[in-house]
Image (cartoon, rainbow, N blue to C red; front, side):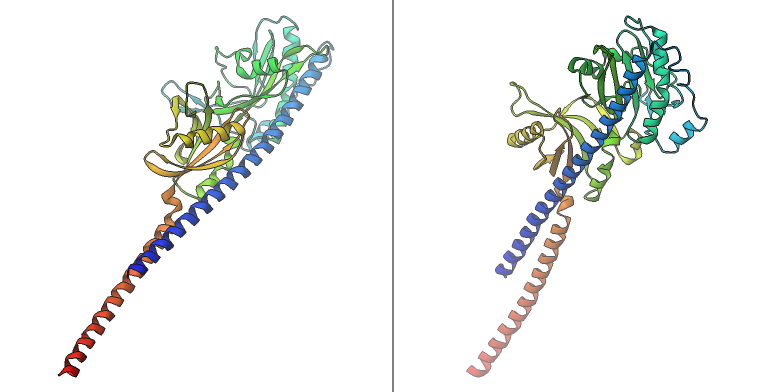
Length: 385
């Protein structure tokens, strides 16, 4: 009986370990494939931005010609219908009460803000940006699910946002943004750290690059804003493993004072009922906590090195499996947290079945043993007389 009990426990333990290894491997492969697809989409967005910047530079270089843009602002009546039929990303405006209201935009024009122009005439720059509307339109039409905003800022001149919106926040000035400063300072294509969109507060990436004049001087910068939910739209595949998956965007923060390194949660996914708020930034600083500091060190090291990894740790009082994969050069990673119990459901069911069979066998064995003892005693009395 003891041997059968031990055998049942061993079988359940082996099944549990095998399922955990399998789950970890499958999730790791899924995260790696997701990261690969994400890199392809990033390269596509970068190519679109280069086309956008090239068109801007050519039009700015020809701004002196009085007929350069005479046909630039003509639009076809069905342009807006074509774009809307492809379901572009939904835009929501956050009110002071925290409500999310749909933001109506116009794909037939761009919103322009005019500041003091030092280098070029304001009217010429405005004409250039107006002439870019067909270009913006065609790029959005080709990639409606990726492009959120198309932004242009000329140093000391005019700025534009496409598609046009009813009201641009008065505090908005592209030359003060991270994407503009990074592009101008580094003089190359730059991805910004995921952050809330200034117009909608939806969490987004921004990729930007400088705009050059014919003499090689930097005139300004242009950018494309991409919702985080657009790049991570395949995360629904993770629901196949569990309905209790937690999806987070995290970043390793290392410093001399922090040991082990801090894993900061910079955004989290909301539930299906709040899908229009798919990803949203957290109002305050939030960090992951680990019972074992070595787990935090391993995750931070992997994220900084751009490696995919899997660890086991407690999260919100539940033993969980954590799988993470790097998504950008800043050490930002997509983190999946799945309760181990969801993966062990099969092992627990198998363990229960094994114990039931063992207990049934023990019961049958006990009955047979009792019968044999009764027969032996009876025979002993009969034969002994």
